[in-house]
Image 1 (spheres, chains in turn purple, orange):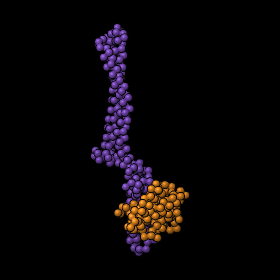
Image 2 (tube, rainbow over the protein chains, first blue to last red):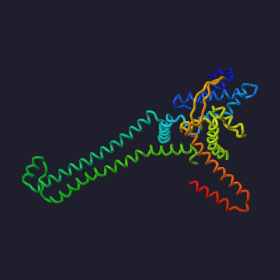
Image 3 (tube, rainbow over the protein chains, first blue to last red):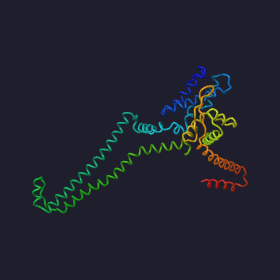
Image 4 (cartoon, rainbow over the protein chains, first blue to last red):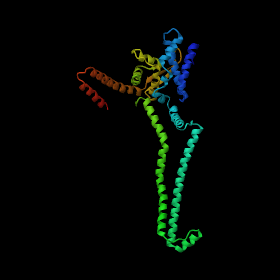
Length: 228
Length: 129
């Protein structure tokens, strides 16, 4: 690309463009090439217009006027310009950074395992919760049923109870009935409360992405100069 | 202070670029020349590219590669019709701001009547909203 210059000057220009490309990592290749071509054209035009005699001095002056590669790329812009590629990846970088900061783990196998562990933990919790709720509801309902049977048809219940090894106790039936209802109610209540549990879990699980989004939005606004 | 100057320039530079492109199309280097020939602004030339890219993402500016008689091709920029109407609005706004700043400065200079004109400026500010 740099054959418009003599070798020594070409080398300096090459080096500058390489540094520029270094700042464009993560952007789509097409956008990288376009900007590098454009900056190259700028250097060429500026170089041919400069009057300094020594070509090395000239190219150095050209590059100094152009500014550091950061200036060419940086600004709100970098984002909007070559956009998406980097924008999508950044939260991942932040997440990686957070993980490293919190646990000293690089977001590699370690980070993945950690995430897997957390996810399994949460899933297991949800599972246990609903299993408990189901167990309470079913046993409570059975208790209600059996107590009713004992009340209404003691003979049948006795037969039934003996067959299934239940203690044929007929005393304090109302108390048992109330207890059975309470247990059923507790199970059903747990199901009902599950909605809030899920909401709460969603909130907690969503904390990290939401925090990242806030940080990211703030950065973007700051870069765009919309926020101090 | 440097940071304040930078902030101020960034905003104005975008408008200056649009103003220049409103007159004629430019490639990067000629745009820099058009911006810095008439005034003494020492411009870090590379800063125009992020702005040009943003403007083109916003659809206010269009670009086209054109072969040069000598050397590598040049990427020419021009305002789109959306860019032209946006510029018309922005330059109007800029003139208002300019008036506001100049008037503020005059007020500052004449210590005799500090309250009156300063209130005017404030009124103009709230009118804009």
